[in-house]
Image (cartoon, rainbow, N blue to C red; front, side):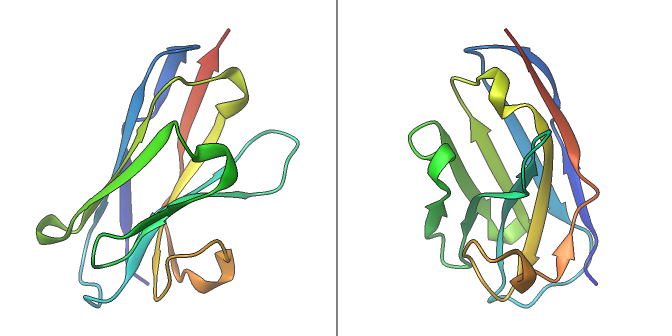
Length: 121
C-alpha cells in the first residue's frame, strides 16, 4: 500500500475557500490516478473528484463548478481547491490513489488517513 499524506483541512466560514494537498510518500506507478472522496455526517462516502496521470480531471456532482483538482506529477502531489464552501461540505476528506480516476471507491488501493473540513454558517 502506498502511504498518502494529506494536509490543509481546517475550519472556515461559508463562502470561503480551502485547499487540500496530498503527497504520495513512496512510489506509485506512473499511470495511477489520484483524487478525493469525502464522508459527510449521515451520508455515504462520496466521490469528490480525481485526476489521471495525464492531468485529466473529473468531478462528482457536488464538486462541479466549485472545486478543482490539480496534480503535480513530478512531486507526486495532488491538490483540491475548494471555493464557495457550504456548511454541507463539512466532513472528512480522503485522498486516494489507484489504477483508476473514476467514482468507484473499490478501485483505489491507497487511502489517506483523512483530513477534517468544517464549514461554519
